[in-house]
Length: 313
Image 1 (tube, rainbow, N blue to C red):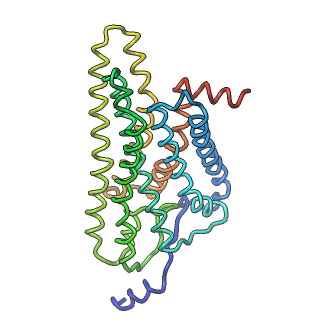
Image 2 (image 1 turned 135 degrees about the vertical axis):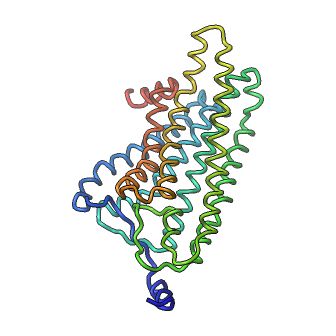
Image 3 (image 1 turned 180 degrees about the horizontal axis):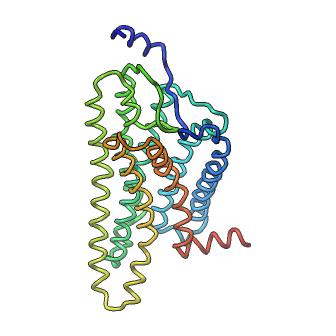
């Protein structure tokens, strides 16, 4: 096949093909039932967290304002992937136009990196609350929280904004099949019949400057928190201080573990079974929005009490 014919085929094809779970296509309708349930729990859980924080004046504190940012981000992530995932598993709709794919990956990556920023902000909140308790109210004012939120959103948008345009300039030839039920930059760029080195380098730069930096700063925050807690004389007070961090630590592990795993698989795990890549992709985008409201409802007494009151009375 000549280069000219490749160019012609790429101009004719204007869609990608999304994938479900390989080898289980005949089970997709049944698989859609737990998937639909997970989306429903995720959306209702995050909406409940947002509603409780908004309507309960006693929760208008920095910790819960950051939690509302996390819930809003998780809600956005769920809604980004919902149409294509359920479209595949319910009715078998695999086709997605290039522009729709680029738009979806923009929102997925933007919200993912925004969640990383929010988790860093929550780590800073715990650091100030435990290590600088007397200055907590003066440091984390509503104005400061608003600026942190806007800076986090701005960073994500600025870094991800070039990606759709960098992908749009490529011709796409050969197989248009993607491995997941949604679009990701690191996967779409591999379908281009052009030099993708610039995209690969920029993608790595974005990951290092967001997830890489944020994870290091979160670890550093907890190192300082642990040092401060170990200096507290009372064992009860030490446990009380650490208990306020449990929910956040769970959220950090739920987010960073599958994200780092999926990035490593995409870049270095070509020999791994395709099913592992697909399942890791589902864990990456479905589990954090699903589990975060559950973790915070179970481990945070104020949220747990409001949820119990809302559903039991």
